Image (cartoon, rainbow, N blue to C red):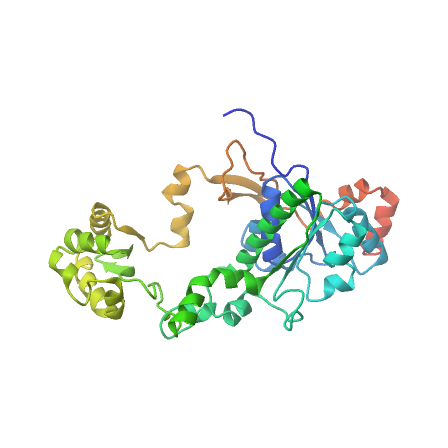
Length: 396
């Protein structure tokens, strides 16, 4: 491969007043592709995600995941001096991202309408819980609360226990829509000259992901049952015991079911059993179907069962843990790991999932709090004495 191509967003500057997960996740995707992301943090403590834990060489696991390749500027936005510095940055920015508390952006004149009156070409991106308008616009919202309010928890977990999804799935969904929305707005500005504002609500982001159970509920008259690691409307689907562990398998159609019965279960006649002949029948008789399968798989090793499933072309996998993911041969074989520097030392980081031919994403350091404050203030014309005075006044 030839020399590294110029990163696609190298000419884009993003100013972000962000915290926690959703907005930082969006801006990190932009930074990966070369955008300059200036992350504005409170002088006392910064982004509160910095203090979620200290497990990654003294840094928070959330923070190092979400904030590589960004510049950290500490700034007290409640002070006149801080507001004046922010305005200088916004005057040359392409994108402004914020996920402040409800109403805070408008009170500071940082809502989309006010911003675009001052800076016609800027693309504002607001990330909120329930949107900037409507009866719930003033409510605080976090990932867990939205998982519950949206009904996602009612679909997740074992039969008798609604459960939170084990990652911040609502924040991640909102972050991805903010990212794609900003990219779309940048393209629109480049092709039409019009800068469009982007607004993403966490509740609406996960609502899109709930499309299938929403349709099933509205037109089926009942919502899908909670099925743990199984699937509410497909069987067999989920974990099954082996002599030394468990395997995950999924039968998606009747052709696969026929092969599964013959090649894996060793009982071709089972495929035409009225209880199991169709997917709907297998769902209705899931316990019986699972028992027949478990009787066969529990007497065989995991490797043998996986071999039989592969021979029958049935999708399967192991019931792994995060440690297994970290050493997975697929990631190693595809050279997906890179190194990124943190204040406490180097760590491993995965390449972003979208691979652009000829492009190696950026892996600049995760910044310590305020690491770029002096250099950024110097760029906007402040001298050493002015910067010292701002520090003395706790503005930075």
